[in-house]
Length: 71
Image (cartoon, rainbow, N blue to C red; front, side):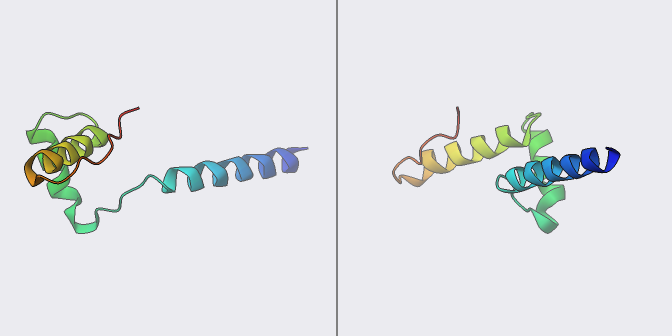
């Protein structure tokens, strides 16, 4: 029975990892400066900084608005 539970757990873990990886942005060597900017601007969540930067880009670029990511 334990093997069956382990298999089910592993399958659920893979499904969650696959779903989560679709929303990940790989920052690579920019991770440290991203974190510093997030802290400097007072955001607690990475998604808040991302939304701020997208809003700022849309405001300053004069380009048509990209639909908001806010749910």
